[in-house]
Amino acid sequence: MTDVRSVWTKHGEAITTAICALFVVLGFIIARNGGSSTVSTGLFLVGYVAGGYRQAIEGTTRLIVERELDVDLLMVVAAIGAAGIGYWFDGALLIFIFALSGTLEGYASARTQRDIESLMSLNPEEATVLRAAKEERVPVDALRVGDVVIVKPGERVPADGQIIEGASLIDQASITGEATPVHRQGGDEVFAGTINGQGGLRVKVSKPAGETVLARIIATVREAQERRPPAQLFIEKFERIYANVVVLGATLFVVVPIFVLHWTFADAWYRAMVFLVVASPCALAASMMPALLSALSNGARNGVLFKGSTYVEALGKVRAVAFDKTGTLTTGRPSVVEVVGGEGADVPNLLSRSAAVEAMSEHPIGAAIVNEARRRNAGGLLATDFQSTVGVGASATVDGSRWHVGKAEMFSVIAESLRAAKDRLEAAGDTVVLVGDDTAHGVIALRDTMRANAADAVRALRHLGIEYVVVLTGDSEGPARVVASAVGADQVHAGLLPSDKVRLVEELLARYGSVAVVGDGVNDAPALATATVGIAMGAGGTDVALDTADVVLMADDVGRIPFAIQLGRRALRVVKQNVVVAVSVMVLLVFADVLGRISLPAGVVGHEGSTLLVTVSGLRLLLQLRS
Image 1 (cartoon, one colour):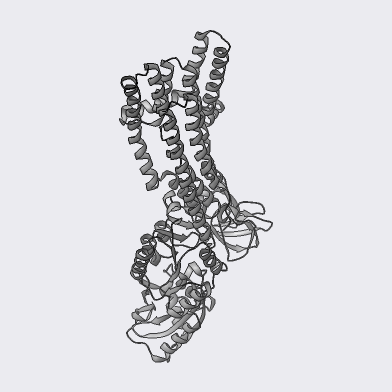
Image 2: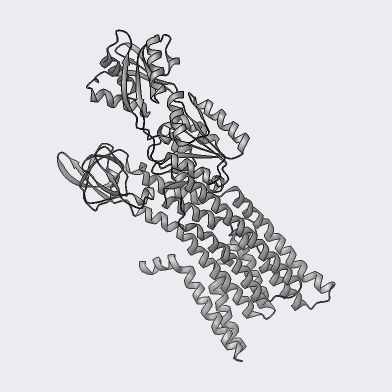
C-alpha cells in the first residue's frame, strides 16, 4: 500500500494524463468511424475528468479563496465551452495537451530538485569516532567539534575537519566541482560528503553536522528555489491581471461578432474558446523560472551556490568586480616570517603576549601569530577583556597591562627603528603588524601565498568583458600592490576600514551600475551587502560574510567567478529568447483567431507547444559550461 501511495505521489499527474490520452483516443476512434455518439461523448467525458480535475479544483479554489482567475481555470472553461457547442474532441484534446504540458513541466522542475536530493545522499549517516582510545560508530549528528573521526579507504568523509594523520586522494567533485581527486595530507582541510581514496585518515572535526559546507549548500539551494526574482514576480502579477483581460476579450469575442458581424452564436462562441486558449500567457509565465532554476542547479553542481535566482540574473549584468586581498586573492593562511623587536625588547616575550591577545581572534593574522608562538614554545600567557576593532587590530589585557596588535593608529609612540623595519618589510610585500602597549615594542611580518588561479581568474574576467577590476583591502600599501600587480588588477586601495570599502563600492556602483564584491571576512560584510552581488569564499569565509553574501564559492575557488558570471549571462540570454518566443507565438495565434484561420486543436498545439518549447529551452542551462 505504501509503494502504491509512493508511486502515486511521484507519478500521479503522469498517470492521470495517460488515462486522459487513452480515453480521448478511444473516443476519437469511435466518433471517426461512425460509432455511437453517446459512447464517444462518454469516453471524452472521462478524458475531461482524468486530465482536468486537478486544474479545475485548483483554479476554482483560487477563484473562491483569493478571488483571482488563473490560467488553469481558463483552460478548463475553454474545454467545457467547446463541449457545450458540440466540439467534444476539440475540448478533450485541449485538456489532454494542457495536462501533458503540466506533467512535463513538473518533471522539468523536479530535475533541479533531484540535485538537492543527490546532495543529501552524499552525507553518510554514521561515522567512526575515536573516543577513549576506542573506535565507536555514532550518528553523524552526534559528532562534536574536536572529535577525531576515522575515514577508511573508499568511505565518505562524515564531517568538515582537518587531517591530523594520514594522506590520500580525495574526490571533492560533489563540493567543488573538481573533475579529478586532489591530494590531501596532514593539516589540510576536508569536507563532509567527499570520498576518500586509498589512504586511511584521521580527521579532527571542525564544524557540527548542521554547519558543514555540504549542509550549507543544501539549505541555501532550498531557500534559493523558493525565491522569485523581481521580473518573475512582475510576470506572475501580470498573469493574474491578464487572465481577467482574457475573459473580457473572450466575452467581446462572443458579443461583438454576433451583433456587428452577424455571426452565429456557435461560431462566435467557438472563436471565443479559441481566444481563451491562445491568448493565455502560459508560455510567458514559463519563460523565466525553469531557466533560472536550471542555472541554480548547474551552479550548485559546480561549486557556485546562488542564494536565489535573483542573483543569477544580477550577476549576468555585472560590469566591475572588486576583490578583497587576504583570504580571497591569497589563501588567507599567512605565516610569520620575521619578528623584529625594538630597543631592549625580548622577542619571545613579544610573541607570547601577541599570541595571548590573538588567541580569541578569528582573523587569519591572529591564527598565524598563535601558531608561530606555539612553534617557538613562546605561549603560556592568558589574556582577558579581549576587544577587536575591525580593520584596525585587537587589544586585550595581558599580565596586568593593555596590549595591542595591529595598525600604527593603535599606538601613541613608535620608534623610528620600528618604522624603518615596518617600511622595509612592507616594501618586500609582507603584511606587518605592530605589537606593544601604548608604545610599540616590535613588529611582526607575515607572508601570505597567492591563490594559484587568481591571476587566471582575472584574465578570464577580462575575456568576458568585465570593464574594471580593483583590489580593496585593509592591508598595507606594499603587500596590497604586490598582489594587485600579480593578478593584473586595474587599481588597488589599501589601508581601508569597512566604511571605506563601502564608500568605494558606492562610487563603483555610480560609475558602472552593477558591481560584484568578492570577500571572506567580517570587514568585507558591509561591502558585500552594498554591492549588486556579494560573493563570499565558502570554505574559509566567516559566518558573517557567508550570511551577507548573495553567492558562495564553496571551495574558495576564485576561478569559479568567471564561470558564475558566464552562467548568469547565459541565463539572461535564454530568458530573453524565451520571452520573445512566448510573446511572438501568442500574438500570432491571437491574430490568426481574429481572422478565423485557426481551429481549437491547432490553437491548443500552438499554445502548449510554445509553453513546452520555452520550458525545454530553460533546461539547456543544466548543461555544463566551460569557465
